[in-house]
Structures are given as C-alpha cells and as structure tokens.
Length: 82
Image (cartoon, rainbow, N blue to C red; front, side):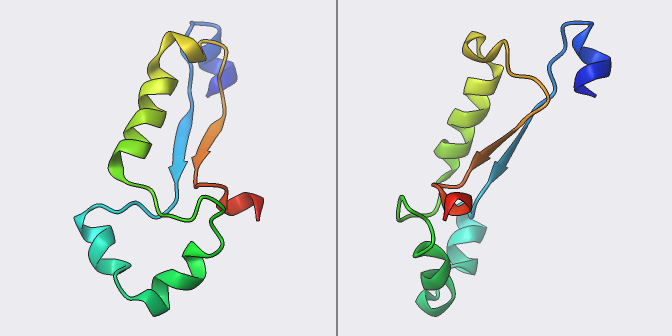
C-alpha cells in the first residue's frame, strides 16, 4: 500500500501496541502471576496506557512524520528489544 498510495501523497503506517491498560486490559492483566512475567520483560517497567497509544497516533498524523511511510510504530516500552 505504501508504494501504491505514496505516489498520491498518501502515507500508510500502523501502530502496534503492547498491553494497554484500558478497562478491559486492567481486568485481564490484574493478576500479578499473569502480568509479572510480561512486565519484567518491558525495559520501561510498565504496560501502556491509552494516552501512550493516542500520542503515537497523533505523532504519526502530524507534520513531524511526513517522511514516515510503510512502517509499523511499535509502542511496547522496549519489549521487543529484550
């Protein structure tokens, strides 16, 4: 899509978050036995909150990202780096 639509000035990107502590996420990950092993693998030491993801999307929609096209922005606190 990035190649096909880029020539029309349309950028195609996506945001891939880690666990997000929405109401559902808070319920699903409230058990420390379940969340602990995952949390320990996140270098920033926490799960995302909705504003973390919203801020990433706002950045991707902003003029600061006009040369970013055809990519995935991973918002995971460094989980994949570990």
